[in-house]
Every structure is written in structure tokens, then in C-alpha cells.
Length: 79
Image (tube, rainbow, N blue to C red; front, top):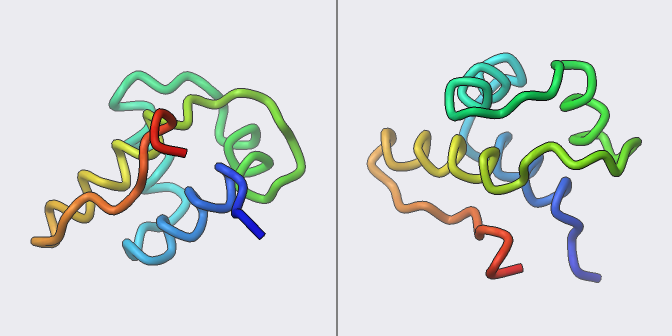
């Protein structure tokens, strides 16, 4: 079964060692605009509201690069 975009983001967040708050702050810093509760619902799969998948992927990929790794989270064009 292919993971959904929210499942990809949540798994990558955990793999990168990011807390929810760290992800939300990075997301907002990159131009994301949803409230924390909406993002939390998205990551938990309880809402289909658009939250800016590519902004979340970029935030997590930047964390991986900061840790000396690559950027393993695919962007929406690659899903």
C-alpha cells in the first residue's frame, strides 16, 4: 500500500528527530500558514485540508541536510 502524503511527512519528521513544534516553526518560517492544530490533524490523518506538503517536505529536508544527510522526502511532483 502506498503511503499518503501526510504519512510520508509524519514518518520523515520522526526519522529526522524533529518534534512537532520544531516542524511547525520551520514550516511557518518557510511561509506555511496553517495553525498548529490543523497541522497536527493533517499529520494524524484526520483532515484532508491542504497544508502545503512541499513546504513541510522542504522543512524536513533542510533538517536532514543540517544533520549531514541528503533530502529524502519527495516533493509533490515526485509522489
